Image 1 (cartoon, one colour):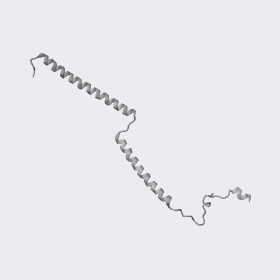
Image 2 (cartoon, helix red, strand yellow; image 1 turned 30 degrees about the vertical axis):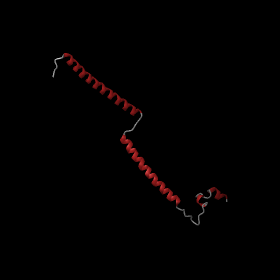
Image 3 (tube, helix red, strand yellow; image 1 turned 45 degrees about the vertical axis):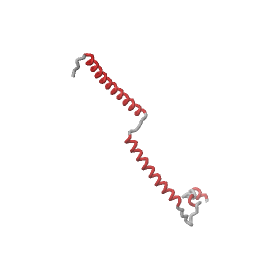
Image 4 (cartoon, helix red, strand yellow; image 1 turned 180 degrees about the horizontal axis):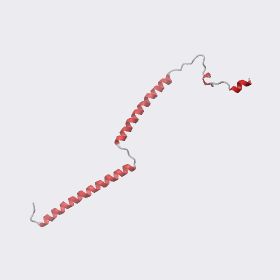
Amino acid sequence: MQSENPFLDQVAKFVTNAAGAAKGVRDEIATMVRTQGERIANDLELVPREEFEAMKSVALKARSEIETLKARIEKLEARPVPIDKHESRIGLNRPIRSQSPKAKRRR
């Protein structure tokens, strides 16, 4: 549909070209912003979401295992230790060899 007014034809071409140029500028700006964002993320050494979620599940599992082990330790520490009638507390710390071979010869 072509109008008979050449001025309106020129304005229509100008607007069409301006819209195309504006879209190109917008796309270029979006590309630059995306590139800058990626560079900043790489500089900050950010991890991907998948790695974060994997490490989070590992940490939660480790925490539950720690809690289980703490409960076992508390249970074991609460249990009384039976002492043999023939062994005293001092006797438990004595060395395996009570005397050196040289000490035996001196006697």
